[in-house]
Image (cartoon, rainbow, N blue to C red):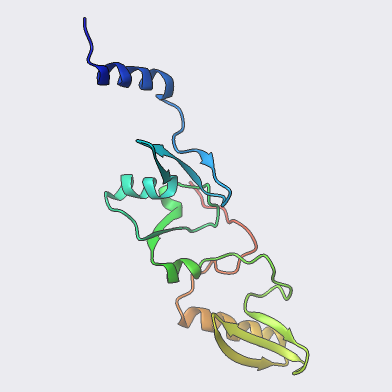
Length: 152
């Protein structure tokens, strides 16, 4: 039986790659990617496209793990919403958006670029920040120190 070149190529490809993970190269930015027809694709964007049939605006990893591309961990959001689910690495106070203000001898609270105020009591400052997060539609995971587990 004679095969066309594309059939031979398909058989070779399937023999070599069928049943193996795809788009699983780890990039320097922590995301997984791979090549499709000589073009690099982020695996989380491909996962969203396959699941929904639509190209995403921006894919947010809900639990903060850039390699966890299960559909339950992905959501299609704009850049602003994605930034509202960022983890923090350099938080000294232990509360996102709350920092010590030496001149004011109080806790300074801000959200995004908006300054909220100074508070003598740390717990009050944290409560004010949490209220501001709710008003500004921040994701509940915002400010976590590392990835969170998602069941499934």
